[in-house]
Structures are given as C-alpha cells and as structure tokens.
Image (cartoon, rainbow, N blue to C red; front, side):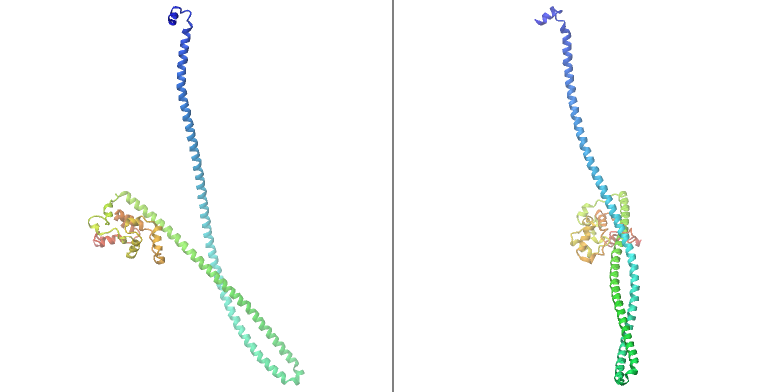
Length: 362
C-alpha cells in the first residue's frame, strides 16, 4: 500500500530518492570501515608482537654484549697475568745471575777467611808455646828471686822489667785470643751464609732448568705436532678413507694376509714394547681403537700408577698412531713414524709378519 502510494504520489515522497542512496552509501561505508578496522587491529597486534620480539632481541644483544665485555676483561686479566709471570721469570733469571755472582764472591771470601783462620790458629799455637816458655821462664825467675832475696835491691829494676815484659806478653796473648774469636765467629757465619746461598742457588737452578727445558720441549713438540697434523690432513684430504670396520670388529687388521696382524698388537706403535703392551691391556686398553680414544692425561694417569718406573716414557703420539692403525691407514702410519728421519716401527712389524715386502732387499 505504501509502495503504491509512493508510486502514485511521487511528488510527496521525493525525499526518498535522496535518502535511499545516502543510507546505502552509509551501509557500504560501515561495511568497508569494519573490514579495514579488523585489518588495522590485526596490523596493530602484529606491530606489538614485533616490538616485543625486538625488545627481547635487544635484551639478548645486551646480554651478549655484557658477556663479550666480561670475556674481554678476562682476556685482559690473563694477558696481565702472563706479563706478570714473564716479568717474574725475568726477575728470577736476574736474581739467579746475581746470586751466582754473590756465591762466587762469598766463596772467595770464605777461602780467604779459612786461610786467615788457619794462620790465626798457627799463631795461637805459637803464642801458647811462647806462654808455656814464659811460664817456665817465670818459674825460673821466681827461683832466682828466692835465691836472690838477699840481693833484692840490685835486682829490683830487673824484676820490674821482667814483670812488665810478662804483663806485656800476657796482654799480647789476650789480644791474639780476642782477635781469633771474632775471626772464628765470622768464619762460621760465612760458612752458614755460604751453605744458605748454595742451597738457594741449587734451588733456583733446580727450578729454572726444568722450567726452561719443559718450555723448550713443549714448544718444540707443539711446533712438530702442528706440522705433522698439517701434513696428515693434506694427505688424508687427497686420499680415500679405508673402511675396514668389519675386519677390525673381528680383531684382525683386514682380509687375507692382513689377518696375521691382530688389533691387540699395540707394539706396532712407536714407544710401546712387550712390557708396556701388557701394562695397557691390564688397564683396559686392548686394541688400537680404544688407545686412539684416550687423551694424554688418561695415559699419564695410567703410567703414574707405577710411580717413577715409567716417567721417562712419552705417550703424546700414541693416540694419533693408534688412530691410523684403527682406520687401516698403514701408509699414513708409516709416513707419520718416519717423519723424524727414523725407520717406521710399523713397517718393521709388517715386514716381519710377511704382510709387506722389505724395500731394502730390492
């Protein structure tokens, strides 16, 4: 009815022509605004999440910066400690040189004082002999005085002279005794100082020589091992790796003639003989693979169980050689053992077992 009235009386309902587009536009705008409002809210949540992540990353960065500063501080401290130790070492060397000079000086002075003391002893004996003679002379004088009491007046001057001479000799004797006592005390003091300085010198030498020898030996060993490992890495990078795990698991070095070589034959390693082979087996190292997995500290701990008996043995290169044997890299092992110019022990063992031919016979 309303619609028919609108159609029949259009002039009275003209405002609907303006209102309907407005309402439609408002509805469409509200729909578009709702859609982009949701998108804007999502973007705001994403921005908040990224801000939170950024703050977290900044916190982690600050933590790592603090750790880096702490490590740099520790590195500086170790550098300072190293410089201090080096300074102490140089100071010890200077002190050692000064002590050597002082010891030589005190030795010369000790020899001179011993000679003076010996001379003083001789002089003392001579004075004692002289005192004995004077006492005999005094007894004779006393006897003469007894016999010459009647002639006392003429001999009074002579008696006074003899008495004065006797007093002079006694004073000289006391003087020599007093001079000898300080010399003996000084000699004993010098002997004590000489013993103390000798002990300090020996202690310094005992501390200095092993430290210098250990430093030089370790430096030489490190340089040599670094060179050897470089050569081995170059060699291994150019050669394919041998895979003999199945034969190694059976306790042999490989198929055919290699079956003569057992994996528990540790004597193929330089520095390991029959006795040391038994020692390692007794301590749970029964094959090359197990030996290759041991560290230098592990091997040192085993040797230290037997006191000073095996202290001269150096097991530094045993794990490296055992690793070659465990991989079946015999060329690498022979090359490693012969880099110092000596004949490789592993080659001698392989020749003895008939696995390898002796090149020297060709």
